[in-house]
Length: 162
Image 1: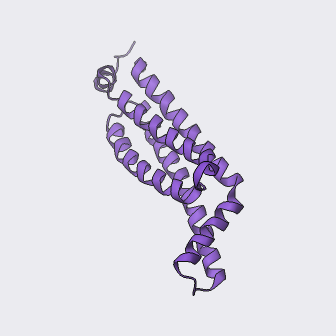
Image 2 (image 1 turned 120 degrees about the horizontal axis):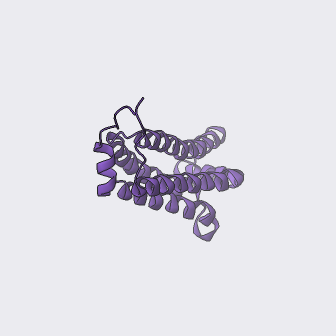
């Protein structure tokens, strides 16, 4: 049986930052969900301004689709990052590269989610600031995972049988 090599402090710190990032994202989703009626109404008004000649029912459906699609995108980013974090904690170094790719997607999703889920001005702060915190925490987590001690941990041979 192989002994488990304990992760270094940098990996544990990275994991904590990732977990805090997930919490911040869920807080943003929670605030958006609580304010969903106003958010959907705001998006319906936005798409109506773009093409007022369309059927009001289809414009309302489009507003709902944009709202729920934005929420789903934020949740999908959290799920993918969580799965990759689990893989990284299993000493698979390739997960750090995958997390970088997802981090770029995360930034794009955050910009879109801010545009569609957060109300303009200070009214959208409950959604906007957790989204910003989520991205900053995720970026910090990824950077910490690049520490030399983390690289040594990924490259270390498993201990032989006891």
